Length: 450
Image 1: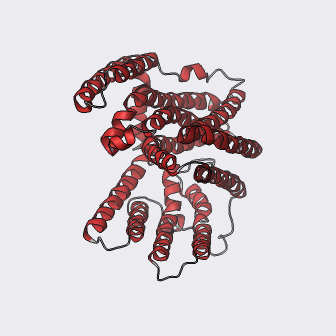
Image 2: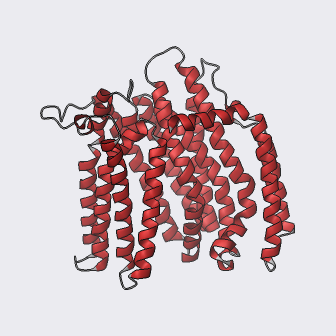
Image 3: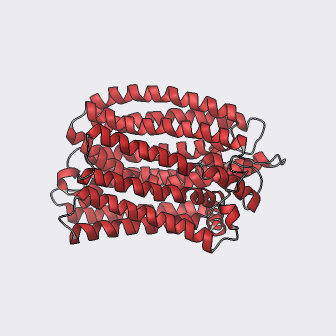
């Protein structure tokens, strides 16, 4: 997807949209092959027959993958056109419908196998994504059908060669990241207890909500913005890139600092409210506190790598992939050592260290990129008034330690929550006053993108 977005010129024109989609549509046949191979492998590995509910659930999941693959080219086009509201509406509707279908099937069809229930809900998600993007571009956009489906005889294999090369690089990079992501779970299964596995699963799903809902869409949109600004050879290119990188890093730092300031103080309360005392009085609350610190590292890494991938040359991207392999090996060693000594918290620390190494690599690249220009400085990325957020975080953390009573939770939690809201309101007011031009710029960008 990122390689498709990294194209020169005005992506809004029909010619460039067709050039982009010609490569983007390659995801469909390749994805079909991967889906078939994955289904066949699971059938062979598990020794399944087609009549078993688990086998049927796998096939239904495969069909859901096909629906999402059909929507992928138009999703890439929408990201290239910075249609942020379209993605927000489509993915929100898809998630909502998936939850509704899951609830209906569980309540109305209790005898239906749960694996099939979740598979059907995933089909609902994929169908909504498919109908949302196809409906938008077929009904509301000005592109002709020949642009959206550039499959004319004689030009099917006439692809943009540099774009294809970048696709290969980014695909290899994504594959390595996938191995890392799944590899950490395998290490956790092999080396840790089922309880710690459950703790990490709970904390990861809860703590990554901010990452999935805020940072990931912002990272992808930032990549589009950086790639567009880096295309061409105009004289103010580095100045524009420096300003946009500063704004992007400042925004994710601001959100990350809010999570760091108030997350550790309210981790116990959140888990107590959502999952009960059984989980909040164990390791889960401590793990979620560590995850709050991990969030800001994730945010900084995502934005800095998005910039590096947007402006780097093909050789620089290959070197980046090589460095990612080195960091992956270090990460696996850290996983083994820290999981054995600290369980789920050790895995979060290993992830944090891995992100830190990648941030350092990206920061070195950014410094070299702007070495002949004064348009970017890391100091300018720190939001003004952020020290008040950190003071508020310390104050709420101390209050939790000395006042929040686990035996008398509800009455003490009310005071604790009220104090946190007051601290947040004061810090938000001060930051707004000091960063009013920046916040106004973010609001104007959102309105323009919509």
